[in-house]
Image 1: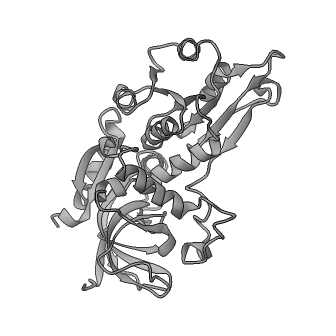
Image 2: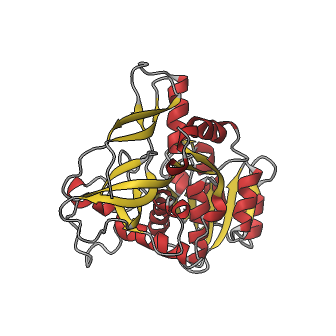
Image 3: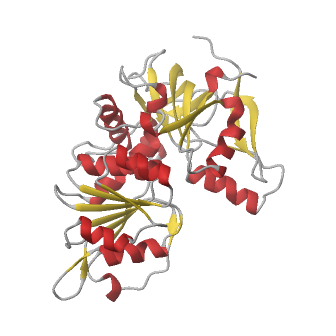
Length: 355
């Protein structure tokens, strides 16, 4: 398979515009694979948040940054220590700075996994965000029959709802956008609550038959002070008046909190990234952790996500609202920013671009 000299990629300018740029395709090093990209997923949270921040506080105009961190395509070249990959193999890829919105991506081998037959490139491109949600569910340590509240129904929140249901929990989901609420309900959430129209505390206690929530998951960015307060008031209460349960934070949020009395004996848990391994450069390019000690690293989480999609236990296809050629990346990003109640899973298709 021939390797072109150049690639095209989406980039952010310092003042928050999205442009298509061109550059040399990097040489393939040890523990790396070169992928011809067939689909990439725009992150409506992290990436669009970064874009908006640049528009509000522009950086020097000359600064152009490629972006993207979740895509899928075909291996067209590989370096040493990549024996598990074959030229022509379909793979799902992840990683900031690696799995770009581009025609071609150079990705460390352990941030790539084979795509099973029956899973499309578009579905496989969800692998990074879906693995992030999976890691949050692992951090939550859910038990069958527990009541779980998911606050924020972007892609990570939507996947977290589905995975919490797979774990045997009863799920109540919260957002301000009706499209996202309707989607969560369609995909299995037991109860959905519009925060602008309903009393979330009253609904949550009716949902739990007065018991209270066992676990809350915060899956959005920005100021989460009100969300923490809301979850605190939903939690189960011990006879000594202490609140009990867990709150898992997977969104890039901040909050002003008072400890310890208001939070009683609750656990506040951060859930960072996709599991062990990501950002460990030695691991990314081939030094695996002993599986007996690290049962679920980033790569095994990625593999599991694709298996759940294949077996119909995780539905990401329904989260796709729009598809654009890579050449129309600016239009795709504007859609996500300007129409959050209409756009969610937006896919870029480099191989169908009209240049």
